[in-house]
Structure formats: C-alpha cells, structure tokens
Image (tube, rainbow, N blue to C red):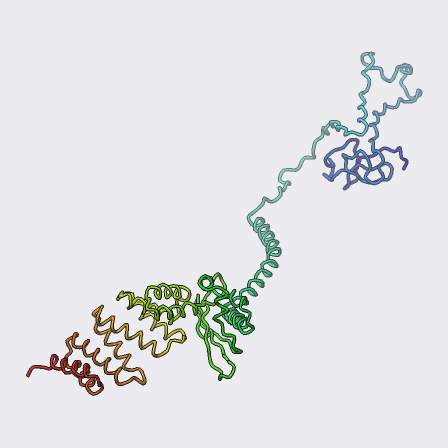
Length: 438
C-alpha cells in the first residue's frame, strides 16, 4: 500500500467499511477503527496520524453517485436520439443537478450523512410467533448475588486467614501462662547479671516514682546467687504470684516468690522494699505520722503485700483510728493466708494483738475480740507470761459479755501461769467480782 493511500473506517468485528467516523457499527454494533493506508494498522477513529508508522491518515472523499448509463442509439426509441439525458421528457425542462456530498475536511471527523430508511421496514412477525426475552427474575438476581459474594469471599478469605494466624500467634505469645514466666525470668536474669538499669526498667510506674535507680542499686544484694524453675502458683486477672528456686552462695536451695502486676498490658514488679525499711526507721524514731505516709505509699505500689498492710495497720492504730485499724489489720491477716511474704509468726501475733485490743477496748466487739485471743493462744511456743496476758484479756472480755462461768475458767488457768504479783492480784480481784453469790 503506497504512502499516499487514504485511510478507511472499518468495523473490527464484521469488517463493514464506512465513509465517516462513528461510535459503533450500524450492522453488528462492533467497535470502529481507522485503518492506516500505509501499514494497515488499526487506530482509533479519532486519530489523525498512525500510531505505528506516523503517516497522516486522511479519509478518501466520498464518490459522487454514478449517472444512469444511456442506452445505445439503436436501442433508443425513435425520435429520442438527440434528447439529452438530463432532460425531462414530461416537461422538456432540464432537471436539477445531482447533489454530491462535500468531501470531509482533511484530518478531521466527517459527520455521517443521514440515511433513508428502507420503505419496506422490518419484516412483519406473524401473530403469536414473537417470543419476548424472559424478564429478569429474582432467581437471576440471586445468582448474581451469589457470584459477587463468591468473588468477595475469594478475595477476603486469604486476608482473613493471614490475619487470624497473626492474631493467634500474638495471643499465644502474650497469654499470661507464657508472658508471666518470661517477665519473671527477665527480671531475675537482670538482677543475677547485676544489670540494675535493666531490672529497674521492669519495675512498675508507682515503684519507680518512689525509688530511684541509685536507691534500687544500693538495696540490691550483690551476693552471688542463681535461680531456676520459674512457675506460676497464683494467677489473677491483674496480678500473679511466681515461685522460683533460689540458690545462694553457701546456702541450701529454697523457694522464693515474686508478685507481678499487669500494667498497660505488661507484667511489672511492684517493688516497695525501700519504703518498708523507711517505715521501720520511722517507728524506731517514734514517728507514726511519717510511718503512716510511707505505709500508704507502699500499699499503693503493691496492694497485695501483707507486710505493707501490716505496717499500715500498726500506723493507724497509733493514730487511734479504730475503724481503719480494724479494716487494715484484718486485711493484712487475710492477705497473709493468700500471698506468700516474709511476714513472720511474731508479726502476725502482733497484728492479732492490735486487732483484739481494738475490738475489746475501742469498738466493743467482744465476740470478735474473743476470736482473736483464741487464735493467739493457738500459736506455738508461747511463753507462760504471754499466755497469762492473753487469758486475763479474754477473761475481761467474757466478763463484759456476761458469761461469768467462762471468765472464771480463764482466771483459774491464768492463776497457774502468771508470776507477776500485779497479775496475781488482778486475778484474785476479778475472781471476787465474777464469783457467783451463795
């Protein structure tokens, strides 16, 4: 094909040619393309240059309609040989010249000429032979919905599967059964390797607010020790007790415990040993007000610490606040049954003594006071003098309750144990008061 050849508008589906651009084929509704006259490449109908060879693409001008061929002279009727073809036989006047469509502008889009509809129109359809297309039904809509749902499922199912695997892995890594021993091992490992900044970072926020890194380092024991066998012995939603095997230099192995609290999704150490030592110093200085402030701070750091609660019990007792004394002392004794601590039997005896005195002399709760004296009398290895004091206190309480017989039994037992002249004189006086009249 030469370079000067004109371009053509061709249907890409049926091959029908058109003299002017359009949007679709009028025959099959296929898309139209402008075929380059130089290389035959099919371009968009709006293109003026070929996308392959760059040749300008100009449509060929429309050809004028061909004139009707004149019959040969011998075939013409007699007397009509010299009548021009354009003459009208009816009137003898020349007809108008035929209309020729102007050529399309070079490089532009030609407006397609209006076509005359076939006068015959579409072929008639016999009555009853036309079958309309089936209307859209709910079943077809259901199929479309199922298809769309299936496509969405195919898209989202791999994403959801990956997300589920990631969530399960995250949950398994952070569940308390694994996170708590891991946090305890990290804290013990840092202390064992004298990494005090690393261990200090594992303290709770409240603990770090009341203890500096230098104070934490000074209170840490640098004696060589090792640990093993970390396990959870008590688990709560916000707290856990961890037991581990402690092996100190020159000492037999023993069990030690840590309390960990959940804080912002992490398990932290509520360290308050520095405050407990300061409380003891305040009691030694006879400063119950400072001891009360420090005990309150120690309880805020670790509300489950029986020792901190015991110091708070003793502090409010010295401040002569019976209601708070009852609450804090009873809570300290209750916590000592649940959480392991270094609260000795002597300390527990002291707490029950404070609680019994508060029940008896301040709150007048005599049955509760008797229960505390009973518990104290059950402590092992009590000295005779301690039993003497407890029996006298229980006898007073029972006498106030109106049970003179039981009070006399306590006084009789106390007389066999007491050695102090003052205590013996008190026993005889109380026996005279509670003796039944004859």
